[in-house]
Image (cartoon, rainbow, N blue to C red; front, side):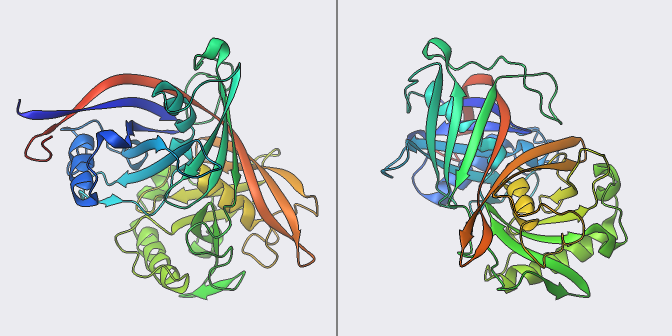
Length: 363
C-alpha cells in the first residue's frame, strides 16, 4: 500500500472543526507527527486541496486524545494548530472551540464511558495544563448531538455542551499579568497583556483608528493595521517572557470597544493572529472577560462589571456574540479572575481513516 491510513473522527467543536485522533494511532516523535499533521490537513496550499483542512485557521486544527495519567482527569487533550499555507505546526496554544468536541470524541473513542443521561468528562489540556469539565448529553449512554442550542457563527442548533475551566490563570506564562502591569505601552499603543486560558495582547480599537465594530473582511483587508498589530504582538511576547513569537500563534491579539448592542457587554475582535477570527475563540473569550475584571486594564471605562463574584458577560464578535460566565475569588483582599465557563455545541461530521503518503509516515 502506498499510503498509511489513520483512524479519526471529524468533529465541529464550536466554530472550529478538525480531525480528532487517538494519540496512540500517531507517531510518537514530534517531528514525524508534525509531518503527518501537515500532510493530513493539506498545509501548503491556500485551499488545503490535498488534505482535509478547510483553507482557514479555524479549520486546520487537530485534537489528539489519550487516557490521562493525571489523577483528576479522564482524558488528555493535546492540541495542534496547523498553518494553512506555511506547513508549520504550533503545539504551544490550546483551543477552546476544539475542546468542546473532546467530551463527545473521548466517549465515541471509548476512552471515557458514558455514565448517565449527562456525562461529565474531566479534561487535562496538555498544552497549557488547564483543567476543564465538559458536560455532554448522553441519553441511553450514547452521545446526542441533536438539541435546540444555537451559537452565533454556526448554522442550525445542536445539543448543549457546558465547559467549566479551572486553574487557567497564567496558562502559559505562569502569571495572570505576565509583564507585572495591568497596562503597558508599545509604539504609543496602550495594551494589557493577560494570560487567562490563553495569553493575549489586548488593545482598544480606537488606538488603531478603528471602531471595533468592523467586519472580518474589512479588518483582513487593512494591511497597515495587521503590520502594526504584529509588531506590537511580537514586542509584547518578549515582555511576557514568551521569547520570539514570530512563528507562534501565541500570544493572540484582541481589540475591545464599547458594545454595539443594548444586550452586549463589550465589542471584541480576535486575531489568530495573522487573520481575523470569524467569531471568537473560547479561550480568547475567557481572557477578554478576565481583562474586564482587572483594574487599570485597557477595558477601563468601556464597562463596569461591579464587585460580583459571578458575572456573565456578553462579548460581541463579527457574527454575533458569546456569553462567558466569569468567576472571581478573593486574593489578598482583591477580587481576581479564577475560573470561567461557556455553553457551546459540537457535531460529529465524519468518521473513518485519513491517508498520508508512506513517504511521510510508514508503519
